[in-house]
Image (cartoon, rainbow, N blue to C red; front, side, top):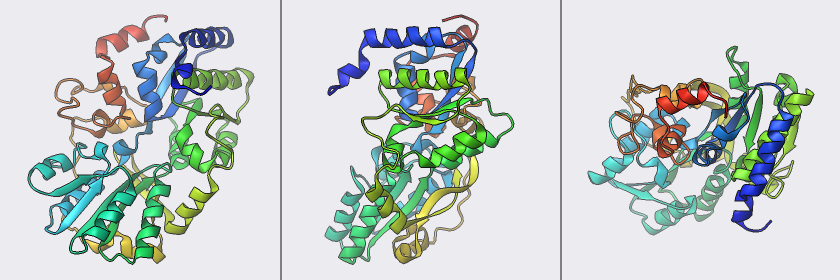
Length: 373
């Protein structure tokens, strides 16, 4: 296969669904970790076409959604200072902080710029030696190598006016935290293919063995997801619990070793707070000591912040799969993509945004629970 349409072939999708119906003899609960996978499942209606009893649980794999509120508030406090250029990926600009968001701050005069690569921020710093350029570095293992390369390049250039506000998070500790919760209903995982393209899947093997859960590295197109679900169900039906790779066109067990080396050089593992979830041990990255001079959190001592989530927002429960977006009293009324209360309604990978874009309502979800697809 070379072209995108081939991964959306309706006839192949029907065959995979038929095979799923023949294979599944019991109810199974499978979590897709990545928000990109969630959007495909919901947009294409795949979760509604699955055999009765197979339920998809939407996981915390939205990097924008899990960026701590404190990090956003700190980024806005830094951006509001004179002489600062704050750079970010575009999907972070409308994520609500305690009082406002980066887009509104830019409308009030702050120099907040959208970049397409972390290297753009390094070029800005080199071209504006009289300004402090701060890069908001968020995301999972997928975006960490690019940020590591930006720091390495800034170090080679000897830039003194470049820094990075780091909020990287790691997927395996989040999966472990979910499985360690006594109330966890997840029986299998679809792991994020783009994360594993960087890291490989070795780190998932101890999780599968310890918790006896199948983990299938899966892509993002409809056929990828249907095949990944089928592979997970086959393992569940046979009592197996190993790591399998559906996304063979992009992922190897060892991953991208050069990218991993760059990350190991620039960053070190640390405890990290996840928005709506809380602090998870050894679940994030921070700049290693040899590169601490590029740490914006150290360079800009932003004090007096009092982060506070909206009391009505249930984003944390949505991110862990405990609740659906339609369970929130504000969903679609006081919380919409134009006026979000929480990050999952903003991001292109947020579960709430996926449900809203697909027209899902409390009534449609309740009807689905009581019917046989």
